[in-house]
Image 1: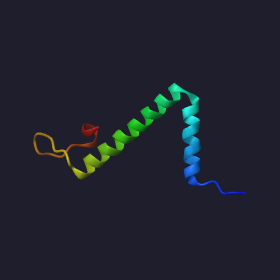
Image 2: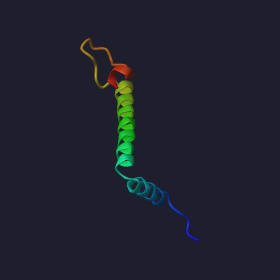
Image 3: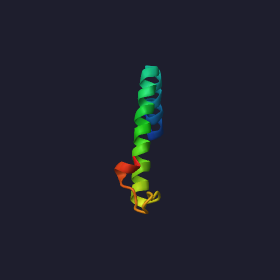
Length: 64
């Protein structure tokens, strides 16, 4: 019996979501968008890449 690899599991999970229809696909895209926004906002807040008008670094709440 072959061992199922992680890439095969990810492909199967993706295929299951695609098979559920449009609503599931839109929901998955919404979740991925929120995750992306939170990760990028955290990076910007921690690194201090985007200072505000006063020269202060922005907090996570202001970045997101």
